[in-house]
Amino acid sequence: MGLGDILGEGDGEDVFVELLHCNLIVPHHQGNCPHVNKFQVNPWVRKNLMPLLQKDKKQLFGIYSQIKTSSSHHNDTLYGSLTLDRREVKLCDEFGFKSNHWKAVFNVNASYLKFGLQWMAKMKYLEVLHLGRWPQHSASHHIEVENEEFLKELEGQKCLKYLSLRGISRISELPPSIFQLESLETLDLKACHNLETLPNDIASLRNLRRLDLSQCYLLDRMPKGIEKLTELRVLKGFVIGSSSKNPSTISDLANLKKLEQLSIHIGSGAVIQDGEFESLKELSALEHLKISWGVSDIRYNDMQIILPSNLEKLHLEGFPGENIPEWLKPDKLPFLLKELNITGGKLKSMDHGEIYDKDRYPWLKIIRLKYLKHLNVHLTNLREMFPSLW
Image (cartoon, rainbow, N blue to C red):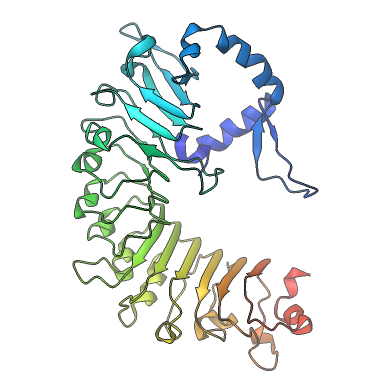
């Protein structure tokens, strides 16, 4: 999740390029790898900025830091962004940090969060609330809140577009106030390991474009209502579980015509109806698809899947079969597919017997095979099957 997720589609890339152009961020190289996928604040900027911040007596209390990234005046009130960069943070109206001053709050380093009474309820102009773990932080970065009452105070937030609770522990359910956020476009619940259920009220988030439920391991079903989120572009962590109480199925997703990214997790004891995965062909805008199997069971080897025609990237994780399934053979794959990732599982062979023209994957540009301890690959056959890789 990056700037584009927070600022909106199309805006993030422009801001990112501008930060590079101004030399405020610089590439972060790891080892001798020539590829760059991480950036950091220019050390010179940090070195010269921190002395200025430390001159402010408010910083001496070690409560939190404030960095104003934008400002405008409305009724003599200054709006900006609040950055939380201390290990323990208490958000309250002390030291002049009035709650109604902020349009965005970012947690970049805090592990323990406390909220003053009604502090969150007063933030009437809040648009971005990122309290969760940043994507580059490891899963060991523990985030804990004193209690979950602050979530109830979100009721009435008319401007909030982005909410991230990623990696925050002890959140077992979401209060009704979350589903009254009529402007919400991004809801990030990734790695909320205690989250057990999602109510059908999720259907009320009609403007939602991104929903991330991945690594929420206690979720065993999806609520009815997800199929009504017709503005969704990204849906991660869709669970097929064993629960029979009003489950949402893959077939229900056929209504999400704008969906571009989808990840599906097949849980232990999952109930899959005949032809359920064939409905994926209805997702004409889908470009990235990930399917993961949480259990190795031969019952899931012969699932019939019809991939969308515009699919560009396919990731299979924990595939339980030993041989390439019928739906993954060259004549079944969409011609726009450029990348294939197979991670883990019991796959032993990628051969289809003798190599013929119809058994090649000439359009694939990238293939990643990881953690496949049973796979026996003959390099000569692999080069024939994937001629565009060399």
